[in-house]
Length: 234
Image 1 (tube, rainbow, N blue to C red):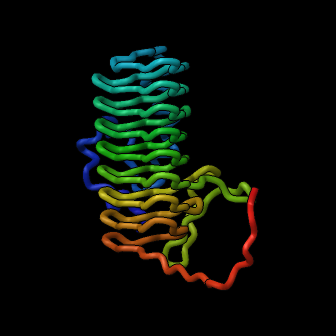
Image 2 (image 1 turned 30 degrees about the vertical axis):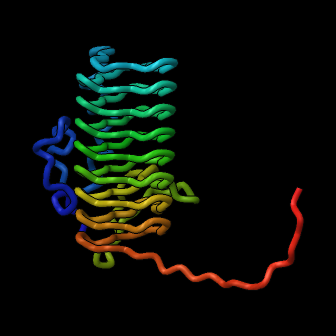
């Protein structure tokens, strides 16, 4: 499934819903981010911060930051970005250029968000890397999760559907995570991973390819126990 509406059913309520207009395939909004922010933020040289900013926070470039948004200490925001209303950005987070964050979202301590669309009410927990990805409404990305966004050979990311390969025209492409999905702590996704809505992924799982909606992924961990020599450690 590569159609946009398979993953996201709440786009009409997204604060920047125009980014999804005329998109058929789910990765197409990522190709539109730079132009969208150029037209809406950069051309008008906007530097609007309607939120509350903590100590030692750096905000550069062009940006729109919505009302009642709370930005913690030591946060770095590099425009162009759009950050919605009632967002919480916890201490030490890094918001890189091309990020669009919807209303009531939470960006956890030490997170890095780069060139991604994070929809309303989503939470990206502490020490997570979210690169070139789209996160659905009310989705939770657990602490320490990595949404990897580039192939080792640096070629464009391709998506395979029914033995047909689709070139996304993206050399950087992380993951698509549908509405109301949960990724547990310390998960990793390979570039171009697609995860349907209402799917739960338990902690520590590595993902790739297409994961259907309304599934639960459970890790199967096996380990061997054997005797250990007693060693006194200094």
